[in-house]
Image 1 (cartoon, rainbow, N blue to C red):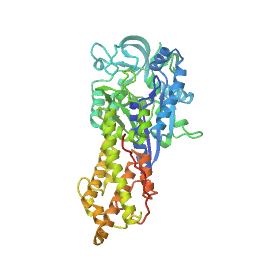
Image 2: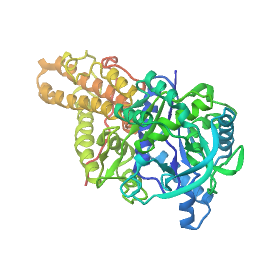
Image 3: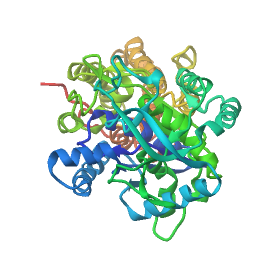
Image 4: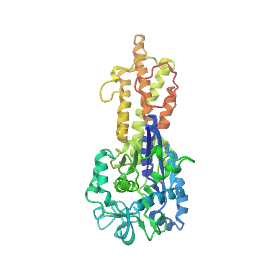
Length: 501
């Protein structure tokens, strides 16, 4: 089975921030999880290098757009690497191979009769690169996202017949109840469709930094059509000498923010149908990361630098925080104080302490060898049972419920900590008649940590790897609680999450 997951491609008009890291981490969690299930995975991310946002940023800095793209795109590549993402390819839309692919698809859309010439007049946001409908306007004809006055534009261009695909889109949503998750985002997309679709501008005559239309070289392609097609074109050249399109198309899950829901949940599937291509199987929409009740945004200047967090705490702590602090799909506040609180309470005190004292007790009481025992029935009942946690997490991630899956894992971290306190191995070790009980407790702690470390690989790959190596566990695929017996020699390791100064 194949699994193709994508992030949106990121504008190179400024440097990356935590919002970009958040989306990429979410996609990476899904990619790593599906690899654990033995699936054939392809994970794509990259940069969007055309359009007015990039052209305007380059003009402000007195450089050519390509120069700005060449300067900033590597910063996004480094961000992807620093957060520990396991992407299979990084696409740049200034790549001529992408341009060739876009031209071929758009020519097909043209040949199929889905475009026409016309005059467009409407409110335009240069930062969104988006014409806003009347129902999308903020107070005083402003952009509700960037909070800037919108420009009234009137221009002759080419249109895409989006209105012709209203029935197709309604059928798609009816046939696939989970096409857009979470459900309330699906309802937003459906509401947009139900209000009636208008044809959308396909080209901009005044834009200079963009791809020319293959049938009209005097007009440049509206950046969103160029950008959306990266998910398709990349598969044709991501690996030298091999076309991966038949192997991975359509995308299994596309991860994106709610601000680009309209483009991905309405225009994108319609464009693919117009080109005779299969739409994606599903979209996972996350909310905004907020700082001071406003969306984290380069243009607003309220950003948290992921590099600073990684420099001090490492990538796994950042990955954990992104998945833990804000319920995936919802808006939520992030802050340095909130990060440090999560780090101290959950990573250092709960997971770190559980691992440290379990390994220390096995080393001290059983000469570093995990006892051979059976799963404790006490850990097989209730909502925090260790038994069946692998299936629960798998089901949640199938619905792209990333935060909920992490909560399911963390419920078991806390259960094992309670298990230590309930059984007090240090007291059992003082009584020779309790030797079998001590073996049982130590085995269940080691086995519980092993299973949770496997489940945490998508969230914290480096930390999980260290834990599994300490437990002499070579397997990295999902496994059930109790599937492994004892007898292996463990290693004590330094604190997984050192206490804050």
